[in-house]
Image (cartoon, rainbow, N blue to C red; front, side, top):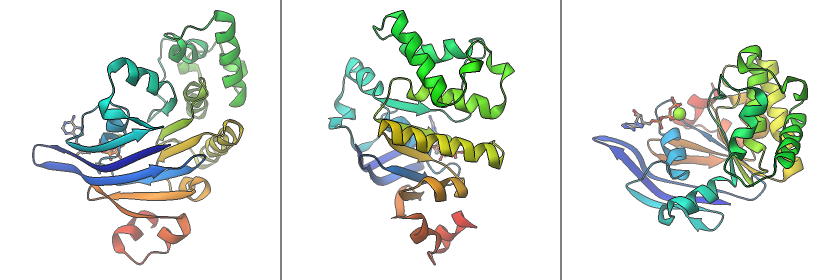
Length: 237
Ligand SMILES: Nc1ncnc2c1ncn2[C@@H]1O[C@H](COP(=O)(O)OP(=O)(O)OP(=O)(O)O)[C@@H](O)[C@H]1O
Ligand SMILES: [Mg+2]
């Protein structure tokens, strides 16, 4: 579904990515873990064509991202759902309007838009909240709305940036369950950036650790969490 090869990016003397590699298989939940400041967001920005890397190859569903024109890039981004760190809902818009936002440039009749909004909200169990403003929602509800917005166009790939951060353990579990349900119903593949060990344990088919700008280690949760390497162990303490 997605492949990054030998990705490099630096800012001045700050060499953030030094030859990072990863790939995402169809239907897979891939977790990427890395310390704060290790370059996870930089990697995602390069992936989405929002930032130009120094060198490397990025391929998404057979298309080379770095070679694409703006309109082709827009087209490709539509096939990718993105759950931003901290939900990132528009405060002045109702839940309905927030969900309609990704549809605004699509040539979809209003009736069909309504159906998509209803379906997406139903899949996160929040149809009742459709006319509420984000300020009227709890943190967990906001995350659900953000999740509904990410999946509204039935993307083949969903990228989650810290989906459970800031939530209490029970709400975090509910969000993880929803992510799994969505993956099952839509057959989508997911790239999940998280520090949450419990989240990784439940959802990761495979994990990649981003350390020192490279894919330092890869494997299942069990493999990595039982590693003797101190840098790897540090994530699971
Ligand atoms: N536009 C930029 N200009 C200069 N430096 C940048 C820029 N964007 C990111 N950086 C630097 O790149 C490094 C990686 O940042 P990044 O945001 O990718 O970290 P992260 O792994 O996402 O961290 P967190 O877990 O805190 O979100 C940091 O040292 C940051 O200061
Ligand atoms: Mg980040």
